[in-house]
Image 1 (cartoon, rainbow, N blue to C red):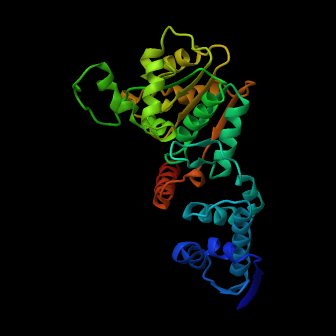
Image 2 (spheres, rainbow, N blue to C red):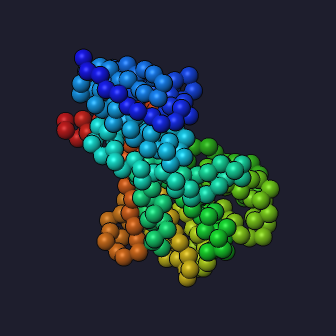
Image 3 (tube, one colour):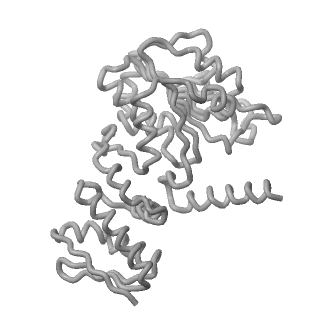
Length: 321
């Protein structure tokens, strides 16, 4: 049995560390089978020596985030644990203080993992950024946040969001309504992100002015997109021909972000994915960045991470067999 003391100068930091109903500390205690007790300005951590060491490193990492004004959540506590298990907890300080956008409700949008931070940095620095990774890693949401930031700073005049109109493994048949109503269900995730950033009134105003356009990929043919921030979502469902068509729409003073997950291809009859092709074809070209997300970058419910890991293990087992 080992015991280690951690001194904390400010009582409000202890409250922030423990979290609501001590939820943060309970996560650490359950993960490392240790006991954490607060005594005045000291924390006492007891348990197996190796596990106590890991728990203390997690607590130190979390305190460094608190010192930089970050609010703790289940997600960043678990992320600090994963960094400690890799021996790279010093990187956690890189996550503090990076606000890329403010939503319509005044909530700051920040990268929550190192993968997300690299993604946002790549979008700032490069004309074309390709973000590939599993569901829940913030690929679309952060791209929309970066687009809104560029638009508010008058770096671009338009935001154009597009995705291929491909059904996810089921046939919906003929949809009622006019053309816009028919394509709306496919574009709903893009609307949700824009409403969150701008609010519905501002969104409608910009759409009427032509500053924001949400359209199926088929509408991009024959256009040159200048002074625009263009996001192609669900790019794994493009054909190679559609991907080439999209990339060649790039105009002057524009940025493109392409997002997708190569494990969720819904193309019929085993057709090749344009995203898989473009990852190979554009590798190593200046001003084009490729960012790979992993299960550790998932910022949804913890079970989403577990589900993704289970599917990855299943695929690996199939390959080995």
